[in-house]
Length: 433
Image 1 (cartoon, rainbow, N blue to C red):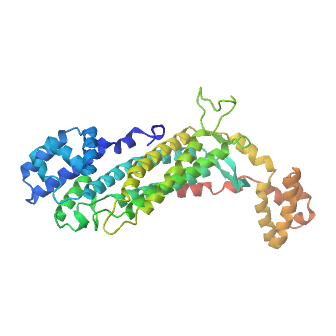
Image 2 (image 1 turned 45 degrees about the horizontal axis):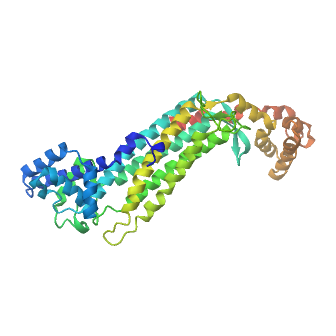
Image 3 (image 1 turned 90 degrees about the vertical axis):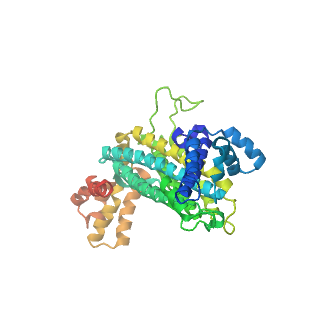
C-alpha cells in the first residue's frame, strides 16, 4: 500500500491491529461454540471473550514472538495467552492455522467489497447526473479515432453508467464468492473439531461454511474475486481514456477540472494536463496485474501448501486499496468534469456534413441503386470534402448521378442532426429505466 494512492477506510481493513482483532474473534467465537456443545467450559469461553475483547493487541510483541517461533499464528496465540491466562489452553482447540488465516482473509475481502461497492455507487451517481445533464448535447461519435456519426455526450456517459452497473453486479457476486468460512482442522476433515463450530463462527462473522475446505478455502474463489477487480479497473480505464482523448488540445470537448493555483507543467505555464485520468489509467494496470497471481494461486499441492500466502499478503491490500482510490478519483473527475458543447459542435462541423454519408448511401440503395454503386457515388463526393474541404451536401447536389436517383430537396432533408439522435430517449430508458 502506497499512502499516495490510499484511503484510510480501506487501509484500516488491512492494518495488523485489524487482522489480529479478526483472528481473536474467530478464536473466541470458536471457543464459544465449543462451550455450547460441551467441549470447552462455558466460564473459560466467557473469560476468553471478555479479556480478549478488552485487550489491545501489541503488534511489536507479536512480531517479537514470531521472530523466535517463525510462525505468525502461534505468535499471536502466545500473545493472547499472556493476558487471557490459563483459560487460553481452550483457544484453538482442534483448529489449524489456515482456519484462522483463510477465514480472516475472507472477512477482510468482504469488508473491502462493501467499500468498493459504495465507491461504484458514487461513480454511478455521478455518471447518471452528468448523463442526464448532457442527454441532448450533440457531439461527434468516433470509430478508430475518426469522425463517424453524431451521438450525444449524454449517451457517452450512459454507456459508462451501464458498464459500471454491470461492474457493481460483478462486485456483489465477487463478495458472495469469498464470503465463506473454514473451521475444519487439519486437512479439512473435522477430525478434531465439530462441524457445528464452523457453522457457529460463520454465522457470527456473516459468512457461510465452506462446503469442502481441504484445510484451506479453495483459491478459485479468490481468483474470481481478483479477476473481478481487474474487470472493474478495465472499465475505469476505458472511461479515463475517453476523457483523456476529449481533453486533447485539438479536440477539447471536455477536460478535468483545473483548480485555482494548480500547475500543469514545471516548464510550460500554459499546460492543463489530464493528470487524474492518466493516473487512473496507471492504477488500473496495477489492479489488473494482481489478477494473474490470484489465478496462479488456485493450483496448490494436495490438501494445502502456502505458496499462495505470500501472494495474498501483497495483493489483498494492494488490489483493494488501489481500486478504492482509483474509483473515488474517477468519480471526482466525472462530478467536476468541464464540458464544452460549443467545441463539440465546432468539431462536428469540421468535415462539412460527412457524418451523413451512410444516410445518403441507404437512400440510394432504396432508390434502386446497387450497394456497390451507391457506395462509390457517395465516396467520390465524400473524398472531395475529405481532401479539399468541399461542402459535402453541395457536392452531392452537383453530382448528376446522385440527384438522378435522390432529388436535391430530399438530400437536404438528410442533413438533419435530429435524425441521429431520435432514439436517445429509448437508450436512456433502457439504461436508467
